[in-house]
Length: 107
Length: 120
Image (tube, rainbow over all chains, first blue to last red; front, top):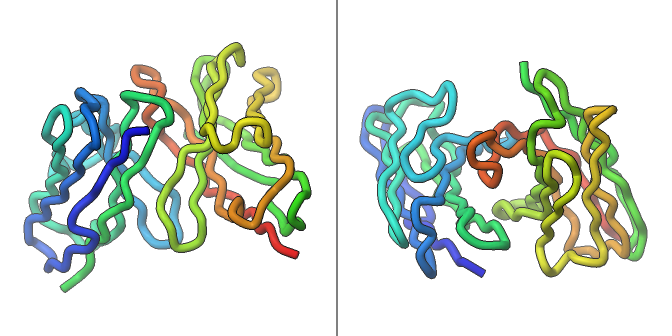
């Protein structure tokens, strides 16, 4: 099983600041990595798939990068609605797995 | 509008059974892989199972094989999760999610979830 480790577990930032979230895989996932956002009490929402492709309707302030085992989600300038939990997910191997999440909190 | 609506969640005793349903609308259901994922209270996400568009291929989280079964009825635009021998640790919100057309093992969109509580 591929284990995804997200860091930091929590990030305290102010609106307008840049957020950088990390996801590290226990073995190569090639480019088969996605990012999801989950706001409190809501279902997850796909942000980015296959490392850097934004899903339909996702603002350009969200971007993804990386390859093999190290990946980054960047939010260029935080909006109030961006304070949420973010999960990475790999589709390289079965079982499909998620990281433990990074909570982006308002400072 | 693409919509997924789960139902069937309930309070059930350990050892019991439950069938979850997911009603799809706003897209051609029979063209897409479909998934179940779950989230225990206060915890992260866990993929459970998925099924190919025509129902011919199914994958499961290894630890759930033999207890959970995924199925679909393309004539009814519906996805199902049959859960047997339920355990306390199966307590979670269960989400159905559509696979992307290009990359079926990334999920978009997700339903709002249905809560399964396993407790005596």
